[in-house]
Amino acid sequence: MTNNKVYYNHGWWDEQYTPWYWVEILLPYIEHLKWKTIWCPFDKEDSQFVKVLINAWHDVVYSHIEYWQDYFEYEPKHWDVMISNPPYKNKRAYWERALSFNKPFALLLPVNILSDSMINKTMVYHDKQLQLLIPQRRMRFYNNVSWETLNKITFKACYFGYNIFKQDIILTDMELN
Image (cartoon, rainbow, N blue to C red; front, side, top):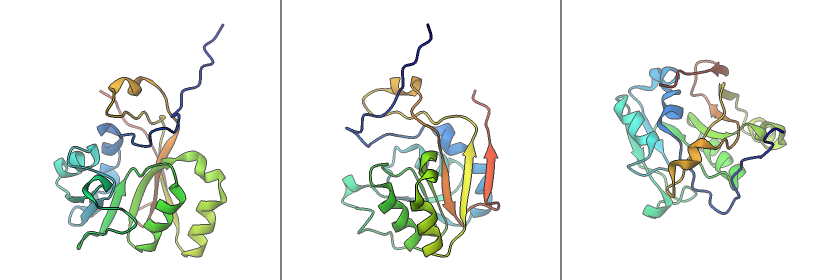
């Protein structure tokens, strides 16, 4: 008998964190942004997005709702590019807000939103070209309760973007040490 158990986020907590190696996968594709300021709007100082990007010599500003910096009301004084993992609940609102800035961005989102007309409608409405960075492997996330969730497959995710990569579709994989 095979194990047919399905692992998923029960939806009771939308605060799931991205491991460092899923941020590092971006680095070769954003090298041309070295002199740009990257805004991580859903991140704190200990976020892997903040840590990895700073360690790769990027200028980073970050904000988080716990710092009274609501993504829908707050914007840093200066930033050039947005990169982060937004909450997946109400992802359409986060996506539309990102498009409204008319600046390059990459948001880590579940691949299944490609089957939703939301992406197509918003890209056409804003007259923008969708870009995708698609890792071969499934994303595994963790929360601050336990790192054990890294052992559970959550779902397939990729970076959805606008005007951030030099190609519109990038299929990639990485070596995990």
